[in-house]
Length: 153
Length: 106
Image (cartoon, rainbow over all chains, first blue to last red; front, side, top):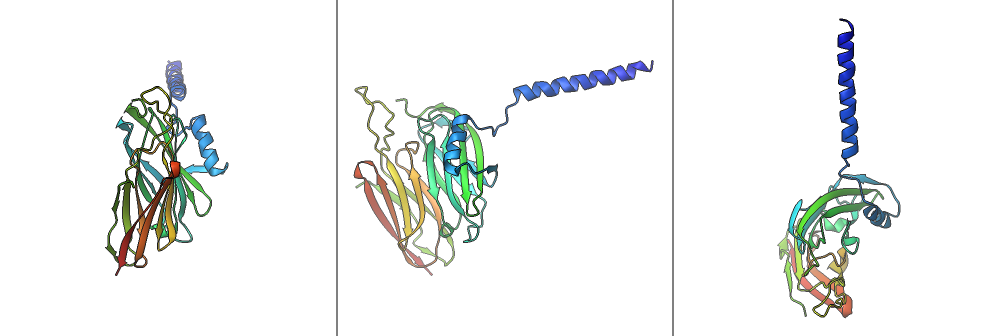
């Protein structure tokens, strides 16, 4: 009789452990960068470490027309002479060229918000990276599904 | 001369952050597309946009083939003094165009 609760407990533990392993195998973190994207990012940062946060790449998660995709880049920053955003760049994973846009800002910009329209060749990952005046780099990674690709007709 | 659309306020209070929206008519040919004869069309893009406020560069952007045709850019500027906002686009095949807008700061 005493052995029953013990064996039930160990079975539960085993099940939980099995579930954990299953999740670990199938689950890929959303912010894991592909090799191409990581290489493009290194080219911009010069190998400096990057952190997730502060910058926001606002884009529709499901894009119907890859020829014009509106994006908005915004960075949380007071934009003062002591603490401002120096540059924001966007890189893509599967267009023919990794670079999308690269903006240079200054305290005279006032607000670190930039909007433009881009092309997307296919469903892929995009990363926005902001360079701060203190030399730190902040990133935001998004996955985008594209139904009509640019550059096909 | 390419057609441009510039949305910028004509008056602002001192220290106010104003939004400027610009658009220029340009095909932004990527250099990766094939033409009707099957040969790749040569690249023809705008490579650089610069906004100067009283001759001081306040915002600039490097554009790549991944920017859509008729490049649109919206950004912000702090209105410090009355003066001229000038916008210049430079690109392949010697493309260069400059437009300007007058801003009065009260």
